[in-house]
Length: 292
Image (cartoon, rainbow, N blue to C red):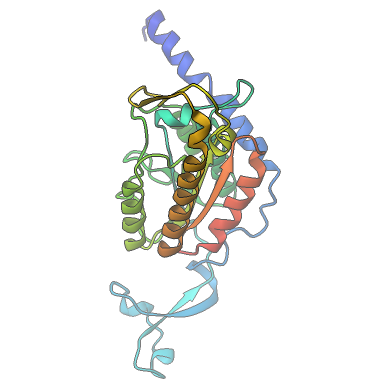
């Protein structure tokens, strides 16, 4: 076996360097959350009766409870308590806008989004569930090896200014988590949520913002430029834009919350200046409530 060229080895070491700290930080964050009975009350292949539900197209005849169905005009399926592993797919925005940080001592939005996704994945894997990323080769799987694969992929950066989720590969009747600043066009987000809902997928939207993006503390001459440099605006009176900016940001949040409500998802906004624990606890509870 020949040794890798120095340049290739240096690049490989550079790419791998963030993995242990990211995964270690995620595991440390996850360790502070009480697992309890996370996810057990969900339909699956358990032994204890949970509920009856109307039969759907595709349900085999062996699943029908004929005694219960005989008491009505509808066929019913007897569902048992969830014990088999379920799937959770994460979309973590890797666009350039996520690289923004309003302070030198504050990590960029991308770092917080990756940390939350991986920490929640640690919790889910410990509870016996499968996790993955919204990518063709990252379908939900269980185990520590999957966490390592996710950590490696989450270290990749995208090339676009703003990201858009893709729901085409989400497993039907599973759960999903989208983490982004959602500052780009909301059309693709609406399309992804609609497509997810059509497949019976429910989940959570987490809008990750830097405190500067929330407060808009600019005044006087200011040059605004997107992280990728595609958009640029210069003004001599930035303070005059504050009111309109805050109104549009509030309208964007309201739209995201409405989209989540209409599709059976949940929505929250998290600031990178706040502890990550609050957002992780919210996500952990939200996935319990959006029962696919």
